Every structure is written in structure tokens, then in C-alpha cells.
Length: 301
Image (cartoon, rainbow, N blue to C red; front, side, top):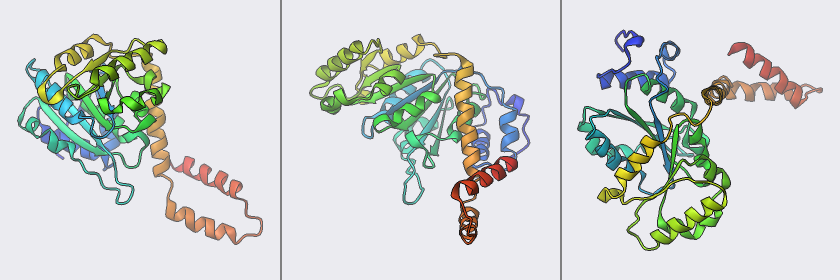
């Protein structure tokens, strides 16, 4: 990557350079910490989290949403968090294909990141990469994750506005929606609202929210027909960027990043070797062993 004054990262138009910066950060390549330490992060840029089960039409929804935002001459950065295979550690990165029409637009930047086994489809790297995008002068940043059950809740630690996308077929399971999901959702979207049972599902969800003392908007959309997309964008504009004290948000992000660096410092091969050697000692105690290891890691981080 060519030399770059990172203070000039704001409103960068060279997307190839931005992609290289993100690659450096994502893979902890030399200089990545310096990149992060020199970011000029604009916390007024809204980060919109869009989550929901596979097949809910999240990518199509984002595609229609970005088309509408583009008409307003706004710049959009999109981070697609793809689930990593538990068998190969590979990621499908398929959402980039489903949003292929956006790649020719000069005001749209799309990047995929694998979950790397993080619960809920997010990783500490996603937090760092969003901060890079927040330093690049976008008007909106959209983060898409796959959520199953309560795992969607992790996106609340990253996004300013959390959107949970559901489909009418989930109607039979509406009573099983976890209260935690109710608490983190700023907007519920019932996509594919032209399907049977959509109105009943939306009404049932609204009643359930009301019973729990929530006034969360429920918006019906048909993403592939652009129905309801303008209402959804209006809701995004009406919600505040920061839902709570910024210090609390930053503390949660700091915790996740520090946990990730701590885990990275844990060399599993060396751990196994030391365990085998320790077991040869008559007075071996697992908890004494762990305490010693933790001290060594903390001294090396």
C-alpha cells in the first residue's frame, strides 16, 4: 500500500486504496495498529445494522435501500458480515453477488468480512473496519449480518440503528422471539409482505411489542418491488445516531477488541505442549497452570 497521510482518509475517493487499508486492518498486517490509531472517526455518521435469518431478503432490501440513497447523491459504505464455515473456516461472501448492480456506482463501496467464528456474525475486526469506513466520509454505513435466534443481539454493540428483518413465515414463532431481541431492535421489517399472512404477522408483532412496553416501528416491505423502502429510509433519518452515552458504546467496543487480541495471543500449540509437560509433574494443578499462563499472556500483549 502506498504511503498515506491517514488524516486525509476522510472523503477518500480511491476505493482500491480504501480496500487495501481494510485488508491491512482485517488481517493485522504490519502497520494496522498505526492505521487505527490515526483514524479521524466521525461518530455522527449513522451505522445501520441489518440482521435477520437466512432467506429474509436482507441483501435485496439493502440493494433497494442503496438505490434510493444514491438518488439523494449520498455515499454509502456497506460491510457484509458472512458466516464462516465451522468446518473449513471459509466464508461464502455471497451477498456481494446479490448486490452486484452496486459495484458500478462511484458512491457505493462494498466489503465482505468473515465472522471468524464470532457469535452472532460479528467480530472485533468488524468494529475496526466500520471505524475505518467512518473515517472515509460516507453518509451512511450499512452492516449486514446473518442472525439466528438471539445471536442478532451482538449487532447492537456495533450499529447505531439496529434493523431486524423477518418474513411472514416466521408468524408461528412470533411468541418465541426473545425479549433481548425486542430490546435491541430499533426497527422491525416484515419483508416479502406480499406473501400470505403478512398483515396478521405484522399486527401480532405490534401487539407483542406493545405488551412489552415497546414502541418499535414495524414496517412492511417488498424489497424486490421497492415497496416500503422509502418509509424505511425515513425511519432511519428520524432516529438518533447515538442511542445512549457514547462512552458506554466505546467501552463495549473496547472490551470486544481487547478480548479478540487476548485470544489471538493464546498460542494453542504451545498450550497443548505445556499441558503435556505439566501433566508429568506430580503436583500438576490445572488452575495454577492457567493462572501462570494468563500472567504470561498479559505480559506479552
